[in-house]
Image 1 (cartoon, rainbow, N blue to C red):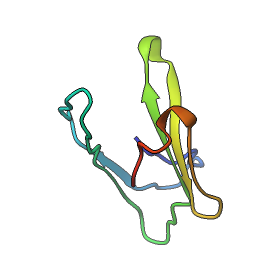
Image 2 (spheres, rainbow, N blue to C red):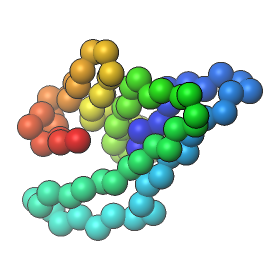
Image 3 (cartoon, rainbow, N blue to C red):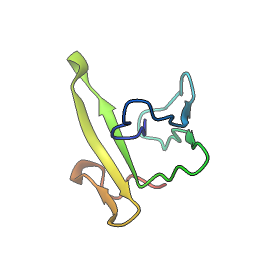
Image 4 (cartoon, rainbow, N blue to C red):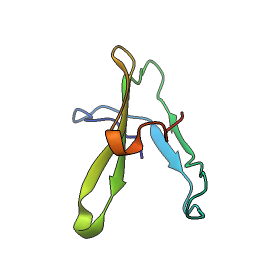
Length: 82
C-alpha cells in the first residue's frame, strides 16, 4: 500500500485507507483500492506500491512521482493502471 516514504518525528501525517481483504481470481483483473487522506497543507509527492512476498520480502511494483512521473517494474509493465 502506498505510504509516505518517511515522516519526520513530531509531524502529523494523513491516513492510509485500504480494504481489509480483496478477493481476486487468478488470470482476472483486480482493483486494489487505496486512499490517502492528507492533512491540511500536506502534499503527496510520491507513492510506492510494494508486493509482499514470503518471509516478509517486498518487491517494488510501481512508483508514482509527482515530478518524475510513473515507473512500473518490468514484470508488471502493461498490467498496472492507476
